[in-house]
Image (cartoon, rainbow, N blue to C red; front, side, top):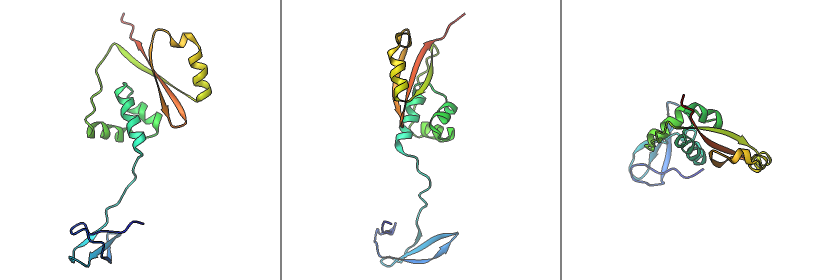
Length: 140
């Protein structure tokens, strides 16, 4: 556990001073300021934040990102808003994705039919790999 410091004077000379709303209260011996320590909450690894934003930029929907990464679509929306990410508007292409383990990815990449007539991006996704491909919409 890291030492607690006073948010007012940054002194580490603090003592416990009761409990308020289920949270420990402290008093600084240097400046007599009373405070409680902020809750840390559940933090999501930055790796998943970056992956979620990459997928959003590639055109994958919030709900699909939720299914792929197991992170709430609301969290993804909040990150998009927080980092002011704008997805490029390109209605001529749509992304499709597949998730493979290493052996499946090698098998997929050795077939020439999978490499023709589409753009593709391969990205690591934990211990798996994701292949995102773009195919043209067929206008009728």
